Image 1 (cartoon, rainbow, N blue to C red):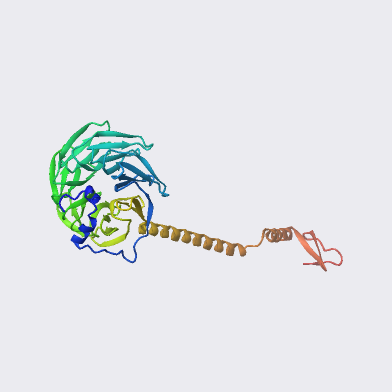
Image 2 (cartoon, rainbow, N blue to C red):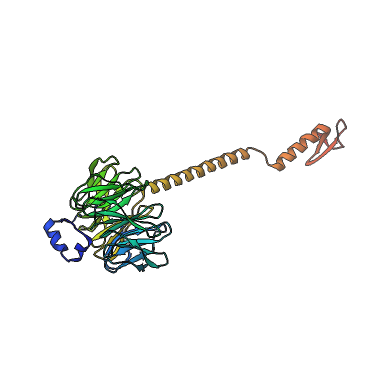
Length: 392
């Protein structure tokens, strides 16, 4: 399947492809994470992104627009795009950018929904990313290169890639990396435009992502696995996936997730290479993203909706358990201290008893106590008790 593109999925030959590959559905494990449909999209959502508030955005290649889905599931069309938007990204101000493969340009949509063309690209821009300065980069499938568009709309070709570049990512230094579907490798382009092959991958890499150490990971569509390439270019297979991994993302712990087009599910691969099926999705998922809590979202190309997979956060659960244990220990300590204090106070006479005792003691030092029945009198020390009273 050389040159497999988004338009290939429009032809209605998916069943033929499935049959020819002898695909087998991989059921999720018994402990699969909960999956639900978050909201609907325009027609043929291809890729997906998320903002800091948890709103989801999809590039809809069949309707030339962008959908917005709130965390509560409210769906709307944010704005229009050029023809066949295939890639989507977002800046720190909430502006959305799409790579429009049908018109060779990039659309910008403000948070208020105002749409415009930011700049032009090479032929067939199929994915998009952004740097910390707001510069936009597109990977151009038809031209085998990467375009750069400044925030002001100035367009240029940054550098070349391998054959059929499909997705793009960027590191903290501004180096660009592309997954080259037709060449089974990854290209690296420096900010100055120097192009090289970083390393090889499995067959037909479609998705690409990067970790905080600069390691590159690709979702290999035909081999059903994930490649890892170190910054030095050392390549290995990290783990296996479901059938047809079409997109890839990574969490803060270094776990890799792929969205598997032909098996309608998401795979998880730990940094140690342990592979599992995380959960199911809607029909023919093709795009994937992750939020700050580790929840996974997929753009379901065949169902025109977005799935949310709620991932159990073990680290957060452990932290909460530790907090509760510490609070309980503190409460027990205070209760013990209170009990010990009460026991000490029980041994001390009351103020009234103490005053009376002190008063009698003081009085006995300066006078003589005389008692008659239940009556008590005090006389000057050394004097005799009244008649009928006895000295005590």
